[in-house]
Image (cartoon, rainbow, N blue to C red; front, side, top):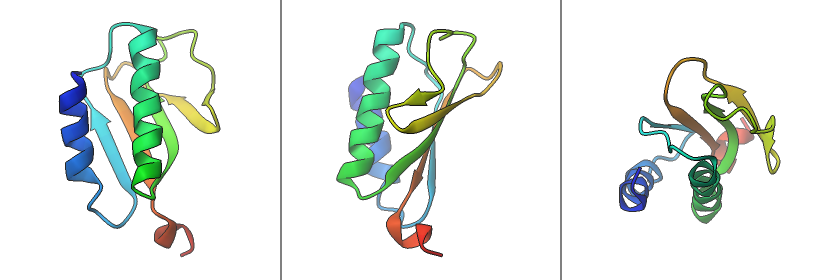
Length: 95
């Protein structure tokens, strides 16, 4: 996914004030690109006071990914060729 498209998704997603799941349907081809995308998601969450709490990705395509990205758990989404980012806003974590 082009960085500009990714940024537009974030711009539209983060005005929402509850837990958010962002699904990306264009999975990067290379692990290096995937790591850059994961880093951007984590940093963008911090910028918007929404902690990245979980990542789902196709482990079959990225067999060298660990079960965590920094402190964020990574789950296999199976055959689905998508990435899912799960964010929590602080006001919803307390409830």
